[in-house]
Image 1 (tube, one colour):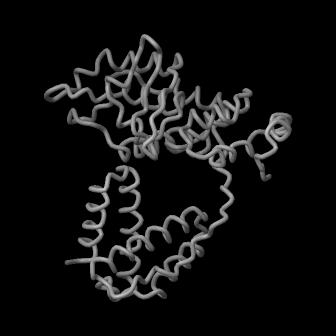
Image 2: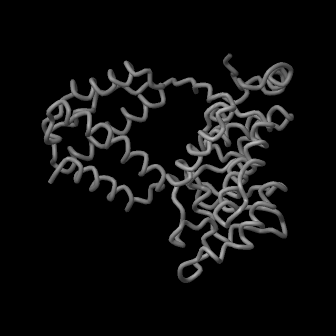
Amino acid sequence: MTMQQEIDDYIAQRTGEGLAAATLERDGDVLGRCLRFLKRRGCRRWADVTPADLDAILTDLAERGRKRATFIGMASNLRTFGGWLQEHGKVLLNPARDLPIPEDIIPELPKPPLEEAQVADILDRLPRRSVRDLRNRAILEVMYGCGLRRNEVVMLDMGHLDFARRTLAVVNGKGGKDRIMPLMSGALGALRDYLALRRTMLKGPDRGIVFLDHAGGRMNGRSIMKWIQYLSKKHPDKPRFHAHLFRHSIAVHLLRRGADIRHVQEFLGHARLDTTKVYLRMVPGHLKDDYDEAMPEIDVRI
C-alpha cells in the first residue's frame, strides 16, 4: 500500500466517524502537501519518516513566512495521523508525537475587510445574463449578507429557505451547529431571481439542492473558491479577496454599526466568543472603548 493510499484510508475512517466534509477535505490537503515534501526527502514508506523529517516541514513553513495557524494545523494533523499509523501497525512509533503545538495562541488579525462600498461595487458589477450568473450572484449575496462559510452555502437545500419569514437555516454547520439567519433584501432578491430559473439547471430528479452545478448536482466549495479567485482578478482596483473575506467583512461591518459582539458571535456561528472578539481589533475608536467598559472580561489586544 502506498503512502497516499494510507492517507486515503485514514480520511475514509474519519469520514465514517461523522467528521465534517470541509474538515476532512482540509486535512487531506494538508497531509498531501506533507507527503510531497517527504517524498522529496527520500521517504517511500511512513515507517521511513523520522521526527527530523517532520521538523523540516515546519522549518520550511517558517522560511516561507506562513502564518501561525498554518503551523498549528500542520502539526495537529501530523500528530493525529501519526497516532493512527501507529495504532494500525504502519509504524512502530508515532514520529509526530513530540511536534510542538502552541497552547496559548492569540488569534491573528484577519486580513483587512472589504469596505461596504467595495462589496456593493463587486455585487453591482456581477453579470446577470444567464441562470449561472444569477446563481453566482446569489451565492455571493448569501456569503456576505448571511455570513456563511463556503461549505455552508453549498449544503443549502430548498427546505432551509423560508421566504415568508425571510430566514435561512444553516443545518449542521461547522461544529455540527444549526442557526437561523435573517435574509436581508440583497440576499433575498438574489435568491428569488436565481430560483425563478433554477429548474433549467436540473439534469434529473429535483433533489432540493439550492445551488446546482453544471451537471445538475450539488456544487462544491472548491468551485466557489475558484470562481471568487477569478472574480478577484477582474477587480484589480480592489484588494485581492477570497471567499472567506466576505464573512470577515460582514462581521466588521456589523460591529462598526454598533452590533453587540455576542450577536455577531451567534450570527457567525462561532462556538467561542474569543473567536469573534478578534474582529474588535479592526473596529476603531469609541466602539472598542464602549466594549472594554461594558464587557471588561474581553481582553482586546491591539
